[in-house]
Image 1 (cartoon, rainbow, N blue to C red):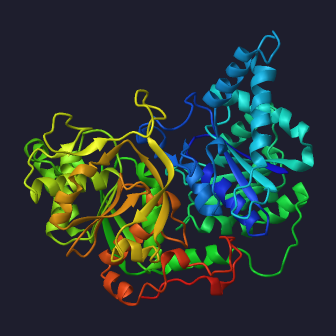
Image 2: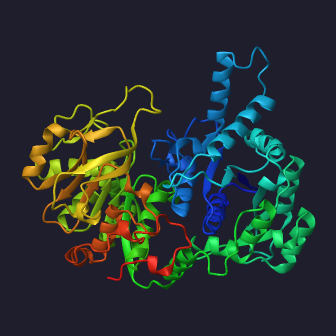
Image 3: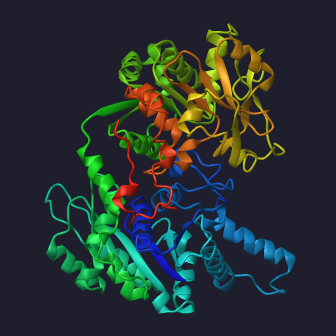
Length: 588
């Protein structure tokens, strides 16, 4: 097993996740099996109880693990399926050590950070690295480990110490360290400054880790003199200083790393079993990056949510929209709208903000209402849904978005004025959305319906079923506590709001579709978590097709190019070294 540790310096949020994913991608393109682990030094057990403003969105895995959004990057880049143990937190490590201590596993010894916590970290990494993440079940050969935060933080010290010991345990030829640092370029001088990187590397080396590659994040390409200066002061060869400047699309990052000889360096440094084949690597990524840059036609989607001040709150949603836009050869424009700005209270408090929000909504080609928690902004979301329904605008509601679509329909069409979710109004006479926990309620953490669940299509004419490739069922990831009230189902269906997908027992409503509308779909699950660059998620794909005015022609052609089949049948995985003929993009 080869281990590649990715650390970060100077600032957090520097792009370690994309760098780690890109390193994994270029190694996977060489035919290696790659897995990934993300370490978060916070004390929370998992990311489940975070506000999206803390660390961005909470990503959900097949097994129901609520994890950091970087695991979403790993899954999308490498086309792998991870589990909750691929995300290590300080909380998980301390919990496992304290549980062992309570059971008497340490035989009366004093339990300390060194060696007990550091040993637990190393054991977790070694155990998790061997677990297969590909569909073929093959054990990985390379494990990319991303250490969150910044070198020098108090909370990440036990992890740095663990890897200082780890490099000797697994031997030098099986471990290397990539350090991602910032090269600021002040506007006043325009000069690229290396001092923050020098200090960051000095601190890392003082803690016992010496970087093999220094990846420099900068706005413009690194000048040769700056590269040589970093090389001289940071104890590495100039070829070990890698420049990752701002690029037009993240699909270009693996190409940047490949162009600067990262694969050949890692091959030599880690004795990787790779034949350096003459054919072009990363065909898929180059094709996607080029197509992304060439797009001329725009499609705009209004994203009506609560956490619109931070784009990371909706990372997977934005990626799913981008994947779908790329598949129909359109450039995506996302219009972020804070749902509270659409409410009448804003009209009184700040009329300019109110009218700007409505202008954004009315000028968009399609409307998306993503998931969320809490009552704030729900009335604004319902007004956006109402507008999309009445104006025949393409609409997709995800999780809470679907529940609010049902509430809005109950109020406007069925005439139940106080219709609501019991999450927001427990006293409602028409509780159209109710609490249906799978587990015993009580604690906030770990009480939701989480992870991969099956949805059975009950209608053969469903638009979404056709978009999925006319399948009988789909397996998608969930993250919610509340469900549409099954006892009221018939009232909606009489008026044209069809529940075309339910869970295996038929008790939980999973998919809604409105009759006589260009595209009005709601899904209780989160399809964005399984969207991939060349396999766009069907609900999002349908929204983009409808928004670009292409859905009917696509359906009329019998959905021959189903988004789930954009790989050739024999490609097996998304290994980025596929032949060009495997890229069956849609040319509508």
